[in-house]
Amino acid sequence: MLKESPIKRRVSRKIYVGDVPVGGDAPISVQSMTNTRTTDVDATVAQIEAIQAAGADIVRVSVPTMDAAEAFKLIKQRVSIPLVADIHFDYRIALKVAEYGVDCLRINPGNIGKEERIRSVVDAAKDKGIPIRIGVNGGSLERDLQEKYGEPVPAALVESAMRHVDILDRLNFQDFKVSVKASDVFLAVGAYRLLAQQIEQPLHLGITEAGGARAGSVKSAVGLGMLLAEGIGDTLRISLAADPVEEVKVGFDILKSLGIRARGINFIACPSCSRQEFDVVSTMNQLEERLEDIVTPMTVSVIGCVVNGPGEALISDMGVAGANRKSGFYINGQRQKERLDNENLVEQLETHIRSYVAESEAQRIDVKVVE
Image (tube, helix red, strand yellow):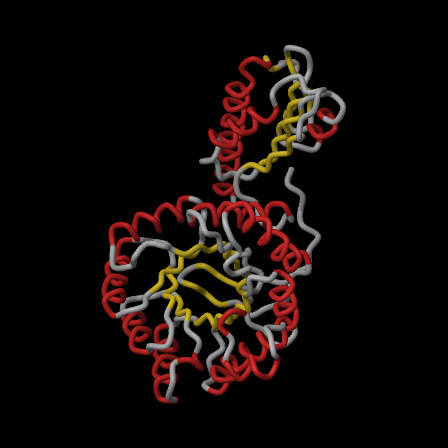
């Protein structure tokens, strides 16, 4: 019973990162980035696979040296998810990873240097169908823009981005996406709002250097939530000083909360109070941990009493309304004759949820066969 989002997306050009569409009518994709040393091929592959298992659509890998580029070649051969190579300044590295099958280049054209170097990278991207991501960061603005504006402001970030955009326009290259990230929420939001009015290309959202797992998640949810609610954004990365897998989870939680994209269980749970008939906090902690592997979208309400429990259960795929010793149980908004024993509530709910998911997947496959 996940409701369709009322948000009207900004119209943007569709590009492809590998086989993943970005922009246009494509779902908003979720990205993360490895934090292993790229030259440690086994460790980087293992992390990419973990990020992919968490649901990511695209993974970015830093390629700062030619040794890293050679390692990237081996990494690309061992993974199936599209890879973005993060490159700064050295156009030769961009050419090398293009040769090795990179799915997207994160490189700012204006930072490469001479015109012939820029053209060689753009020509390689054209020839191999590789998009480019322009990435502007509030912490590394050009010196002249710092002097012009005095401090990072939205207009400064956008002016920096448009310098790179103008280069690609001049070289007749349109398959690119742009980010204007900042660690300050209002600076980033203001920059994206301005940029959204000036180009048709997809926008890559992010609050850069957002912080640790908790604070960074909150900051990202506030900033990206504001933009996504306005229809701005085509792909996103949550930048946390944490396991990259957590970035993916938070990204999907933000999209899920806005009804934009669903993956896994959307839990509705009360904060608990003295009315609770079972330990709601413990129940939720266990359910989230046990059911982390489920990717099928569904909504489950876990409410500790009968004040709000029945109402939430009526609009959920599955719901529990706490009562003395045994709690009310609902499926698809219908109260069931069966009541769940509060003493082993987690085990019973897990069994029912997995059965519900299995039935839903079977029905989905049947529909596909008929079509």
